Image (cartoon, rainbow, N blue to C red; front, side, top):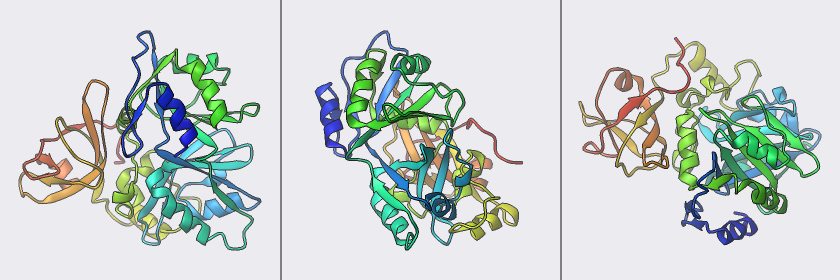
Amino acid sequence: MNEQWRTFLSDQGAEYDASGLITQVPEPVTSASASLYDLSWRSVLRITGADAQDFLHGQFSNDVKALNGQSSQLNSYANPKGRILALFRLLKGQGDFYLDCPAEVLPAFSKRLHMFVMRSDVQIASMDETHAMVGLSGEGAPQALTEAGLAVPEAVEAITVDPDSATIVARLPGNQPRFTLLAPTETLSEHWHVLSPLAGLRPSVEWKHEQVMAGLPEVYTATTEAYVAQMVNLQLTNGLSFKKGCFPGQEVVARLQYLGKLKQRMYLYACQGAEAAPGDSVFSEDTGMAVGDVVEIAKDRDGKQHCLLVLKTAAAEGGQALHLADPDGPLLTRCELPYAFED
């Protein structure tokens, strides 16, 4: 975690828990039509070098060569069995590649990437000590960016790059305008002073809830190597390419897509009063047996709790009553994802 950035936000009244998430925030900006989120619980890697594009294209599940400096993409890194080691958003800005993922998975992820660089002209470095990242969402978010002198990406998954301030703005999927801002720490502090009167700082869990409602999964240490790409709907969220050629686990992913039957996939559920975490089990009331597990779980500012679950399709589609974390745990209620499953 960037201690300079954490100190800056602490001086603004933010309070962190032991995991690096902001849990307490200053008095809300009552007139704000947007929200700000600290994303320092995530880590950012910068990948540079003459061979960077070809290297990443051969390692990741999505079409890295499709990144043109004006877009981002959901992407993943899998083992030879197709099981996801890391899930992240990747973009290309000013010729370099940037990816962000939960900080807890970065050490193992980065170490494995380094193993395969060998003689390629590729440099991989963490940006956590020099840069910081925030989330910005809400109907007033585009105007807040404009007030900060930053160009607004108009399309979902589009990015803008401000070369003068070295700030990258990426637009994310969601039911309202949502953006991330990546910039050098001091620069982001300057942006913050403009943005914060227009968009109040909110607890980190609310950003996670926005991700859940957008149907966007995360992979944490507890769920590393738990899922194949289609189990977390990457083929439905522009996170997977079947035309790009080889990558680790590609044969497993392709076989499942063209020859197999998907027996587990990710669903959205509501769950009130639940104490659960990624990797916890979901149980069928009919059998008392585990039928899936938690991908992500979070609450919004009104206390409404939702979760993304990877479930056996027979249990989810068969109308079985499902309980979270324990056979007698809270009852789950299925909700509609913002995208449709394949026929």
